Image (tube, rainbow, N blue to C red; front, top):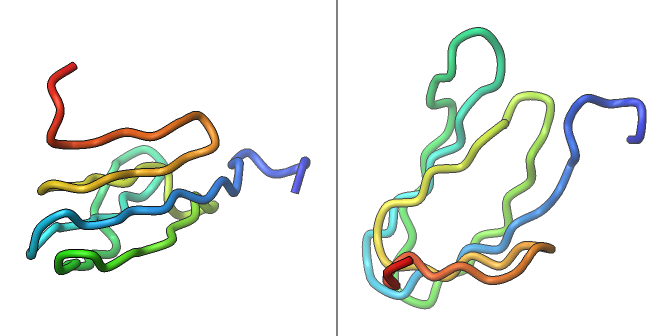
Length: 77
């Protein structure tokens, strides 16, 4: 995996409310949505950055766990 231009990192997303939207976005010259999921309260999704997925957009209240730390979407910066 060290030879690839993407990291392969995983993130864990836990919904804090019903209807949290998780969108995978493509890499390349134009960023586009390529996958969408909707999570209900307490549901967990494990996602991975791949050669196709360069970003993940999350809409709604959720906790995101990464190797860099924990982010809550319902807290002000």
